[in-house]
Length: 325
Ligand code: CUA
Image (cartoon, rainbow, N blue to C red):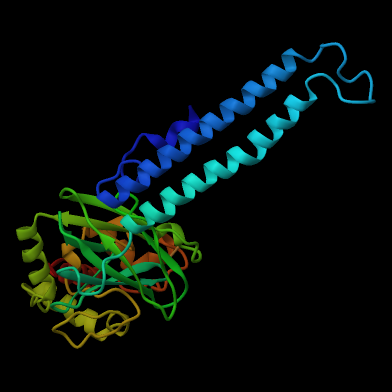
């Protein structure tokens, strides 16, 4: 039973496909799995068969000349050991390479109505929508039932972008842009994960793809392109001053303010996201305060230092960030 412990949840499972590409990958998996079980069954059957015949007279007692059954044995070796594997592997090659690789291929540039740029960082994902200048991180939205082209690259080391329910993996390689199609059969939230070991916090380099009904998506995208909301209330106003005068603004951008750092995620609409630190923690008031003051405890080794701010200044800062809808 512990072997099946990971099978209960259907989030982030390539065996719970929600797109045509992921369905092709899943059926390829099941065909390969079925073939492997048949192969295993054959080998076990042969073992049992030979074990049952182990006491037959004439085998193993003399070494001269052909023994009864030896010709049969050679044809079994050639048939099962050479011909069958070649036929099986060739069939699988044709299915995977000719069919599945093609059906999971990225659409040509400009062939889709929407192209999204994804840039891997240690250890988070930058997401840009060139059509209107929207920028976000770790939570990308796409319209459901609409093919979207993703151009994927990296700002540092090799990462790999993978949403198991929607498509295969695509590597983010320095100096290169690789493309993949994202398509979701129905609206929903699909979890993704960096699929290439990239350092200390590789495991905390996750992301969500939200597939929205098209009208909801259009509203979201328009909102993400707007500059940040002006702070409302005295606390949020004071928080903006803390942000702009402190270390925050050297690493983060908030569009519509002088903060234009590019080391960490764009925070213009931080409050519209559900998580912090590439899905490390939920985006709640308490977690946000913890993240600011002790992100090295929450996600050790990440690029953000613990910020020495507390009391009233911290509460103001959190109030300001929570207003960035
Ligand atoms: Cu990025 Cu693993």
